[in-house]
Length: 189
Length: 155
Ligand SMILES: [Zn+2]
Image 1: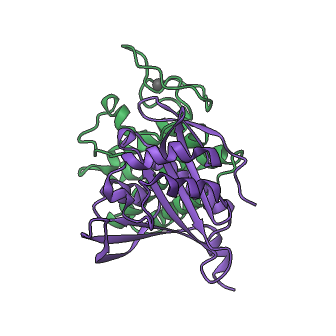
Image 2: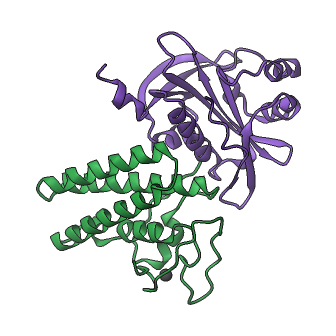
């Protein structure tokens, strides 16, 4: 069961901005596309596709499958201010690992939205009985790395000059892991 | 508990109540959600035990305050469905036990620090469930005899 009964969830940011968290739906393509377009290049480096192209985002919106990819959007009115996505494999040796991707709009940074999104993903990960959450962050994204660490993620590895951005420049990749409570129960089987 | 700043008993209001700006003479904790937990946290956070000249009495006092804070957090968590917070609370108790089991010294201090950090995260989880921003001790530092308060960057 995907634990989405907690949505929509309203949260207040440090500057009293009200944001509503909820899973992405098909009708969000346009607002998600606008959100992605305003993000700095470095935040988009991990995407396999050119998310500045509207048809790419429209295709995602049509193919939503929460079992595999669960995108939680932070909405301010009709605008997307942030997203936290949990990627899962339904079968195979990584089915107890959730991969986390969090994106925050430049105009709401440092107001606690990123941390709130990490809390959401931690909650979902626990409810889905995952053993680990895994986050991959480019080392320059220091605020994100520190926020993940404060929320219980631990640096597992730093790969030097490992990933390239869309202009071909190389960056260090930080891999962070968050052990979940289910791990303790599983460990001795 | 009585408030570490004004000495009064603040009633808990874990609702959506936001912090009312402190007028002169009024207590900054008045009306905030989970007031006992936040005031209890800050009392330890800004406590003497972390100073260079702390005595063993300061340390024992902080240990007892931490014990009480964790018990109060456990009580608040009982009615909430936040598994991640439960895990953090367990770790907080573990750290506190480790701190209490050995001799007093830097190791003990370090584990008490860990316990307090876990407690802070759980308080943040409780607040998040109510839709509120996390607790920031820096917002209350002015009311304590606090030296330098580490800057806590938010994301
Ligand atoms: Zn007071």
